[in-house]
Amino acid sequence: MKFTPFFSLYMPTLTSSFPFLLYSKQPPWLICSPPQSSPITTFNNGSKRTRPFSLFSSSLLLQVSKAKTKQNIHQNFDFFFLFSGRNHFANRWWSKETVAIVTGGNKGIGFSLVKRLAESGLTVILTARDVERGYKAIEQLRNEHGDGDDLHLHFYRLDVSDPASIKTFVSLFEKDFGVLDILVNNAAVSFNEIHENSVEHAETVVKTNFYGPKLLIEALLPMFRQSTSACSRILNITSRLGSINKMRNPKMKEMLLSENLSEEQIEGMVNLFIENVKKGTWKSQGWPEIWTDYAVSKLALNAYSRVLATRYKDCGLRVNCFCPGFTQTSMTRGKGTHTATDAAEVGARLALLPPHQLPTGKFYIGFSPGIVSKL
Ligand code: NAP
Image 1 (cartoon, protein in one colour):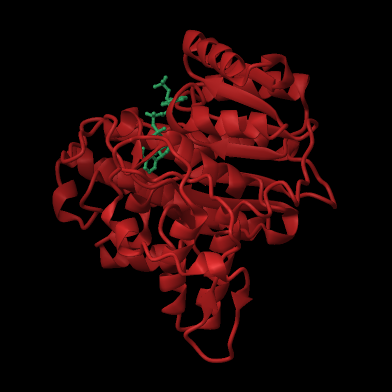
Image 2 (cartoon, rainbow, N blue to C red; image 1 turned 180 degrees about the vertical axis):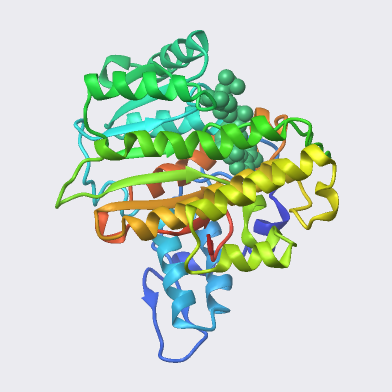
């Protein structure tokens, strides 16, 4: 069995013998784990196995012991709980009446997210742009589950790049369900091979990855459940390629970092990018260097998530982003450090965080300790 260098580096299993969190007044602080298993698998040969929790937590231990501020430790502490599996079912706030929508649910991370959420007992709306692929996914999920009738699964067609399809979906959803608790904007496209950077399909990429989730959110906003005991939530699956630090244009970066960032400014940025692409000037304008069109679309979605999080922070709607890391799916031509199931496990935990632990306006970058970044 071959481990990724990251984990082999941190192999010593100091932690399984220390079942407590140790918290001193001075850094470095130390987190120790309970002796239990994490469901996350990270073997780079693609094999699917349960990783011993002590292995995972010893990497966390080394990272956390380097933490220099209390803020850092709190971030790592959240991370610890997120991955430890301790809060997932113990703090179960949902039921089969809880409704979750996942876009692009027919394959990849979206499919695994639907599976995880449905197996957790929620009602899950699997959406896909292709009807046949959508029903096939539902059938596969029911077959894989054994007693598939236990799953509360529904399929609706939804092409997020088509405003008419969004409209039709939302009106059907409103008629059939009327209320929504969780929206996972997962559907996205990239037309690049791993080491390519073509912007040939920039308009489709921006339309699907940024405007798609934005229009869907706007149309579904009135349907989010108002509840005092639980929080409605949006989880946007984005990418670290869309982190603010990937933007090299200083003016644009300043705008993105501004506390007063507006929706109009974000759309202005995206439109300027498309204009640069059409004029053939995009290479010299300081846009992100890797998978530029995809990175701009995810940057815009991250920024929009921040605007929404601020706007709805007092209204019981929490908005967060999650980058699943380099995952073995069609988008990466099967390459990656972990499977879609692994990525979805973390994504589902985030989507299901108990209301008192659920933040808003955070960008979780999966599979690396200290995972919260600025949106
Ligand atoms: P994937 O296997 O290619 O799945 C993408 C899904 O999105 C498919 O179900 C696809 O449907 C759907 N989709 C594409 N365009 C759509 C549209 N216009 N309307 C509705 N559905 C559409 O990719 P993945 O890796 O699972 O990606 C899932 C999410 O993770 C994406 O947001 C991606 O940006 C993000 N992500 C992935 C990685 C990675 O390494 N894989 C890293 C960072 C972030 P079809 O089958 O019909 O094409």
